[in-house]
Image (tube, rainbow, N blue to C red; front, side, top):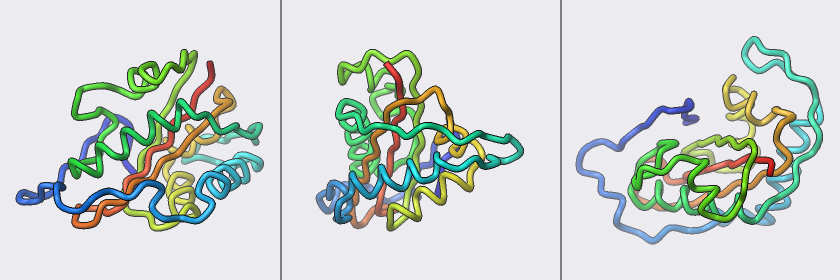
Amino acid sequence: MVLPAGAEVRPEPGRTGSEPAAQDRCDLPAFRTTLLQAVNRARAASRVCGSQPMAAAPPLQWERRLFAAAQGHSADMARLDYMSHTGRDGRSVPQRVLAQGYPWSVVGENLAAGPQSVDEVVEGWLASPGHCVNLMKRDFAEVAVACVQRDGTTWGRYWTMVLGRE
């Protein structure tokens, strides 16, 4: 599932999301390297996102503060079994990024729930017009993606991509 900006999805009644512990990085080997390569490979080619043509974009660099914001949000969504760009504490991505000490000039976020691999999540984002535009925007210079797995939840894996530029 790929979530449109501003949307929220909640689990069906009776699911608490408080059972098993969450797993960081979803046990995917070489997570950071594999993810950054997949994202930059996607940005290297021009494409059409929905009906919007997007030129190829420069590669992104991994950013640890963006990762901390992404990791915290994915962990929160996995723990509480929900999907939303707004955290349960009411904070938005700009607020989460600032809380990690990243003084952004532009920031964006893509979410997904359920994909089992880096390729699957990146392909899902590219197939969704709004997420594709975010991924291809030349305004962004840095990125981080977190995946947190929690068995017994609605989607199992909760992905957060945070893109930014200081």
